[in-house]
Image 1 (cartoon, rainbow, N blue to C red):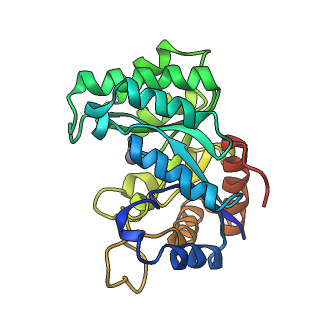
Image 2 (cartoon, rainbow, N blue to C red):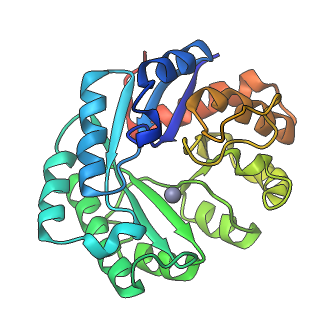
Length: 264
Ligand SMILES: [Zn+2]
């Protein structure tokens, strides 16, 4: 069984002391390739550096997360443009809108998002999107550039039936994390995940965040890591009523197609 973790924040400081072991454990659990999320100017530079150091196994995205949209300026835009030209950088993002936390003012979020949509239109690479409590505005921004952007994934989808339908209508891909294992707030995803076409369903850990609550025995630390993608895959497979090997094969093929990754 081969899996691809389409969203891992491997440049997070919590991985600094045991990065190689984390990667080795992931590979031992069938995670063949991983896309390292770039969520700020510096974070995108770092994601590119680890991808370069692990060619063919790690890939990077380059973008500025809505939480950091307040820092988005001409320099960040120029840096992102440079990174998007590199083969190790396979998507534009993480970008989008987050009105749940509002860590950056909303007009700054919309500005940074719109600029990154332009970058995606320019370079032709797919979009790695983040949305929380901002569904209508996110769609409006995306609809403005319809026909000019290519593939897009709504990463860490946590929304409702209507939102899922809006995304699938637009042919977007859906990223499912261990949120689905959270009996307090992810229960609705158990049913919704059945409606995602196999060629639109992507799997991700969002490590070190979102440790799946159904991992047994629960690790003593709270850090999520890519090896738990196999657990997420098994849970999603059960909800979809299919063998884990089928979910794995389909989501891996979908991820390779989405990011245009070389086969291992
Ligand atoms: Zn996110």
